[in-house]
Length: 244
Ligand code: PGA
Image (tube, rainbow, N blue to C red):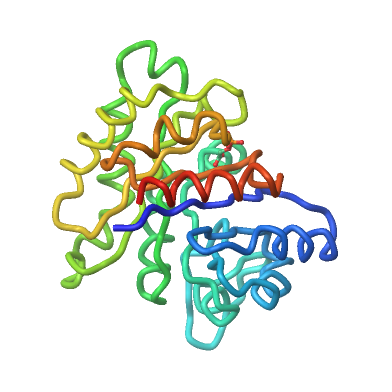
């Protein structure tokens, strides 16, 4: 399976012109660009080789829309040509109190609408230091996927799991490839049956990407900060291609 690189722009940039420019400069095959909601349409119209993803989705998806102020539905994303959606990013869990149960509902809404969910899991520094990493990841996977594991087509459902240790996000201190390989094995053991790609996220740059991507077990990377720099992100995609 080809490796995938996710560009998580987070709450950047601040104007549609900049978003269009960055999308045009980083429109390469193998990249999934996840801009903020207001720029989805502009990015969709700009890219030809990259794919489109969103950074979040609401769990209700009524056929005729609904009274959910500020939320964005899976159908709305799908109609804007999004193929992927990030769900349960640690910044949402921490800043907005998103729970595993909410994540589960969002994953189901995404799957029902035909989007490929990118489920983010990861532990805090304190949890890592106290040896709780696998316990946390098991819980996040078990509850997060609980509503789709009841679906009869779960085996054919495409799914991406991003292992992102929270302490590695935006800190410049990535996890080690050795630990990631151990986590990939653990995660695959938890989700056996699904068509799942397991990718790494947390301070990925063009300098360290190869250390992760050279392993066939690691299916790609979720890139935050470095995805806003055209040289960096296009280089990371090139590295991924070398190891496809
Ligand atoms: P980072 O972010 O690459 O800036 O560490 C990764 C993420 O939060 O997805």
